[in-house]
Length: 396
Image (cartoon, rainbow, N blue to C red; front, side):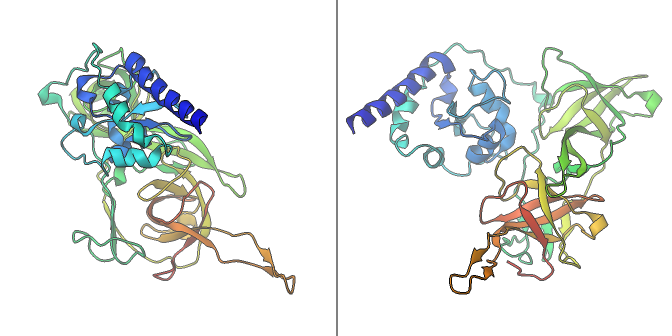
């Protein structure tokens, strides 16, 4: 027992010293707490988990100055979480007190050391502060609002603003989709006003290869997207398409013959030079719920984000689309087949009931795939889990 305590004390002491000497905390971060990175974590989902807003991950990266590449964090690394004192005031509310959230995510013996960790990371340093953008340029990054679900969907939550038999998803425009073919891009980002940076977000200024020759006018808006990973059918291994990620939106502010200046007005994810553009078309955020005509079966084939586990409000894609009769507003049960067992008396094979994992609602349909939002998760949901269309309300 003494050896165990000595090891634990040494670990916590080493973690404290590491933050004092390397991590460069500032006065504004004096009430930050420490989280230990686990397998599959990203700055995106850590920001979502502890601050209820994944779009503030750049601030989390800024706070943890030892991270040189925000895409490369490793299990076992300590992350100083964003204290509420440095969060944007508008549209950001912590899902729960940070101390409680961290206690749930850390090894059992660590929460008792939180006061020492807090005290140790308050040492101010001369780390450079990020300059604020001029007031007239500030454009808040669009928040991922929690969707509302009518009582027509099992496990749904009734909101007075949601009419019966409808599903409201505020972030419809950034949900993305799977496309078997290349999109016909109107143009792309070719340079940035700040050439020293590689990652951009609202309200950065960029240049696009569209001008008056292409009919572009001041005030025109474009969605910014990128073609991502190839997606395959988990059962047949057939190629289903590319994941198309909607990274944000920009607005043309100045037009010349072959090039235009634009400001990024919305950033859902990191934006880079050579990301593609398509004309922006305002879409609906409300979908009428409808039962499927047939018990369509399929799989969860990919997620909007590269997570190992998915839950409520996460966007995922399925391998069934309009070709199979899927429509926006259809709901699907997400499940796993349990392994059959042998009857100890008759030795017959017994097929056990399906293991229900949750439910999803279709928000966008392609020919052979669809985009969906997980509206309920009662267990962990992963890529490859099976789905079954709801043809009668209350299937789960």
